[in-house]
Amino acid sequence: MHPEINLALHHARAADLRAQAEAHRLAAEARRPHEIRARLGWALVEVGLRLATPKPKPVLVH
Image (tube, rainbow, N blue to C red; front, side):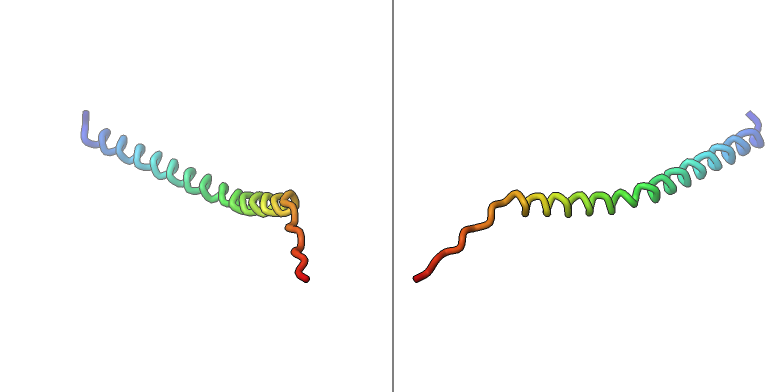
C-alpha cells in the first residue's frame, strides 16, 4: 500500500471518529433535561408518602 493512501485512510478514519465523538457529545447534552424530570418525580413520591402516612395522634397530658 502506498504511504499516501495509508495517510488518506488515516485522515478519513480520524474525521469519522471526530464526527462520532461530536454526535455522542450532543446526545449527552440532550439527555440532561431528564434530570429535571427525575427531581420532579422524587418530589411527587415524597408528597405521596406524606399523604399516605397517617398523622400521629396527639398525646393528651393532664
